[in-house]
Image (tube, rainbow over all chains, first blue to last red; front, top):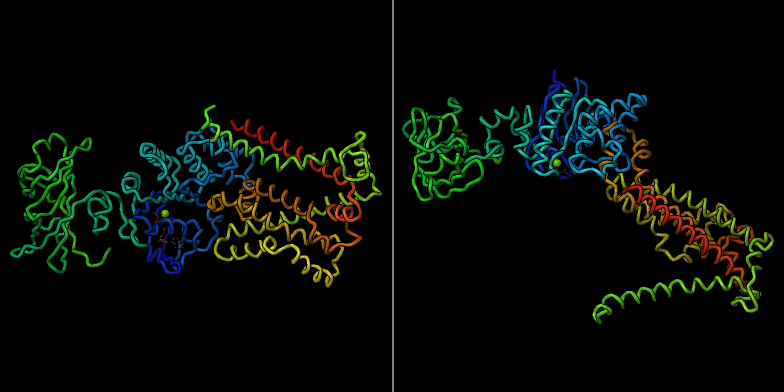
Length: 358
Length: 267
Ligand SMILES: Nc1ncnc2c1ncn2[C@@H]1O[C@H](COP(=O)(O)OP(=O)(O)OP(=O)(O)O)[C@@H](O)[C@H]1O
Ligand SMILES: [Mg+2]
């Protein structure tokens, strides 16, 4: 049985619907990320899990027991806040010991645990500092150590890395993964950064407008999204318009070429017009070989972005498309030239044209 | 010095010193007056004398008892107003929303209503409750007058405190009283201390309302001074002023020393 089960949860403020129909179960030891744009309800769900927000509807259960209305202090969930919320009047060691003192642990046990937590997050020699005497990254580690000290059932993290610079963020991502592995604690992690979500999570729940749009392992969501929203939100993507071929309903016509329904071949969609997506990294230059789908496009622009070259193409249908290529493959792609391009058919996605704004 | 520098730096500096002089020189005048050898307010003429300081210490003259009365009332008032101020300010801070703002306006009303009007009202009310000329009556009135000060001072301290500290503490297992005692209170000590001091001082020199609601039984220092001014201006007043001035200066110096030591410890 899953450790944490969220059943048809909803939260409405006076006029705003912050969450509706949230269903999610989290297994023990899992790293689940709630990913979505600003205002999509991620924090609201995390606050409901922590017990700081009372849901308007639905149930949260832990080990099969209803905890929807249990006080936050009785849930035994760790919480890492954006901006850390460390106790400014306490030293690092006393911040970490706070939950243990509240639980009336013995002095010796507290001291041992604090030492253990400090070395877990690599802050052994900063025990006597006050939070304001620490850098952002160090404060972050203290916040995590404090939330893990009492052995929480679940660790809830609300955009813990968003205040850090890029380099530090990447270090801390690895650090968090290591802590997750070493402690075996279940993590529920909120972020609006899709790269972070992909790099860290066992599963991602993608939020938009207070709903979960899709849930799955990062690879599945990236390779086989079933909604236009997820296809566009995770990673970079090209969206092109297509339609079913008039003469063969198993074929799709788009960007001046045609190919068989690549992903969900059996699915039947109403209407002819379709959305086709192709990831920039799946477009290659050269004549199509074997199964590959070939098409011709005009190079509009060619820009160097480090390891890769970004090429803006204009297809025969007049749509624009971005391709990222290794520099040596891109030398031939000069602006104004018409070039041959090819795509592995399994890398092309086809989605129904959605009428709703999901 | 170039003329421009004189205008830009010298002039404002001169002005600042003049202002300080204007504020403090009249206060300093009380020191020689307190040492006068005459029985009326004057500068020492044939020599200095400590007789007026001696008079202060003389119990039967009433200065000392009234000082003790005032100190007692001010301490009680500071204690009560601080406890109530902390309770209100912390409650309003934690709750948020519209009702704390409304309550705050109500609480601040003693600062807005002129004391004389308040005094007239209190006479009526205290007469009915038989609290006129009683310690309880005076302390209650002083508490009401001091509450806005403590609430403002403590509220200012709280406004710098991150609301999420409460959530952090609760997620770590702390119940509301623990959150208050271990997280909120330690972080607002300066505000609480300032509030208590303001409450003490406001009670210590409250005269308007006190005059109306006291008679023979409760004689606070301001009341005693008021009475003495009415017959003849006694140089003992200058002696009192000097004593208070010395206490104030000592307190400020002590505070500065403590602050400096704290700063040194920090770096
Ligand atoms: N206390 C509140 N009162 C009214 N509306 C609220 C409240 N808290 C959140 N909301 C609304 O609920 C919606 C979801 O907010 P939430 O904070 O959960 O978003 P989020 O996904 O965490 O966004 P972000 O990435 O910006 O943190 C928003 O439209 C927000 O305005
Ligand atoms: Mg948020």
